[in-house]
Structure formats: C-alpha cells, structure tokens
Length: 294
Image (cartoon, rainbow, N blue to C red; front, side, top):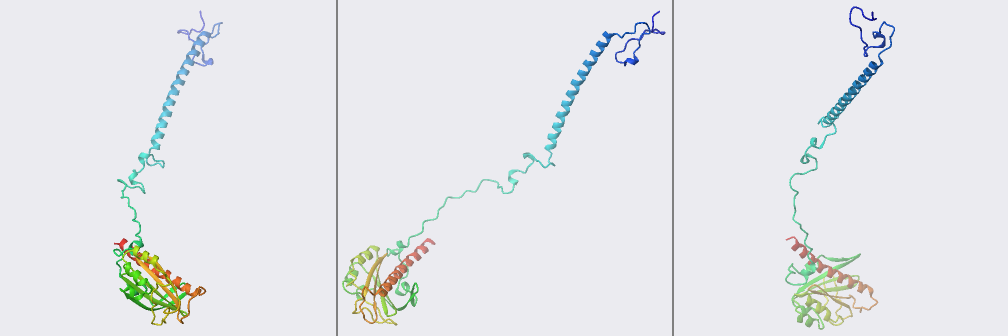
C-alpha cells in the first residue's frame, strides 16, 4: 500500500504553492522533485521577463502619450507661451503698416539765387531805384558812429555832377544815372555818388580808368551840411560793384586840406564805402529772394 492515497488519486507537487502547502508523500521518501522545481522556476522567470517587457512597452506608450498631452497643452491659447500661429497677424501688431510702402519722388532744393546776378545787368536789376531808396532814413550808423544825413540828388546827366575827366569817362561808358547823398559828423563832411550802367563790365571799366586825384564828383551841401571839398584838398575814392560805380569825397567843412595824418577822414571814407556797397548788395539780395519765391 502506498502512502498519500486517501480515496482518490495521489496528490502532485505544485510548484506554485509555498513549501508549507506541498502535499508531501507520507512515505519514507519525502524529498521534493528537484527537476520539477527547476522547470517551474524557469517558467516563472520567463513569465516575469514577458511581463517586464510588456510593462516597459506600456510605460513607453504612457510617456509618449504624456509628451503628446504636454505639447497639446503648450499649444493651448490660454497659456502664456503662445506660438507664432496664436499671435496676431503682422498687420495687427502695433507700429506696423499694411500695403506697399509709400514712395516719394527724389527732390532737392534748388540752389539759392545769386544777388550779383541781379545787380550786374539792367535786364535783371528792375527794382525801383532812387537816392532815397538806396540811402534811406535821416542818418547813417556805422558801428558806434552816427552820421547826420544831408540832401540827396538824382540826375540822368552824369557829366553835370562830376569834375576833371570823369564826365567824359562816364559818358563814354554809358552812364545812365547818377545818385548823390551827403553826411556830416564832427566837422567832417562826405558826399557819396553812385553812377548807374547797363552792365557790370561798364562799371568795372570806369573804376579802373578814374584818377582819384583829379577825376572826382561834386560835393553836395545843404540841410545842415556845409560846403566841403570845393577848393580844399579832399580824400576821393572809387569802386565798382555789379553795374554800379560808386565814389566818395571827404573833407573838412572849415576848408582845411586833408593830409595822410587825418585818420578821422579816412575812417569816414571807409565807413561810407562799406555802407554803399552793402546797400547795393541788399538791393540784389532782395530781388534774388523775390525771384526764388515766385
């Protein structure tokens, strides 16, 4: 009679049960079946490997799903990091304009007109002209010095108001008008004369021909300005600017001759020459400005 049989088939070794639950044979031989145990252990290891591989695959899928969810969440418009597709269009951004950029024709300001062009020829120098226009006011201020203005004179007979060879020089070169004005300061009187020509070339030629010792203008007295330079030696000058030749004659009202030591007379002469040149230039500048604004 064998051990372990109790009204049924003999119980088998179950490798999946704990050692304490195994149906040990009640016979003398109670040694486990080691071959069966090894086979069961190998089977369990295979199952574990399969479960591990399967679990890893599932974990990978789960990670991929999580990343996909994160990307979708990042693309959510409610987030603060909006992608380019979620930003407003370029046309909606501040400071941007739509449509083609405006184009402008390239322009440049014309060069300013030269005043000398207007005072160098009769054709352009058409502004009103007269002694009171060229020498306005009741006095002349040069620096800190103020000269009282005397009478003015305006004539078309250039020979009548000049001396020496100057009448012939003016006539030969086409003088059309002669303007005069006188000033006085501290016993020194001066007369300015302006000869008008059609061209600058005529005026320049006259200035280069005159002998200032003998070819002089007649002084102009009256209205507070005493006679001067009628017989005494005086300082005489000539210059040209544009189509104008301008002269000065300066001396003492008491009839004293002017010498090289009389620096005050030379100062008056320089002041009057500069003033006359400036007045002629202003005439040209005014006409140039008016022409530029037309």
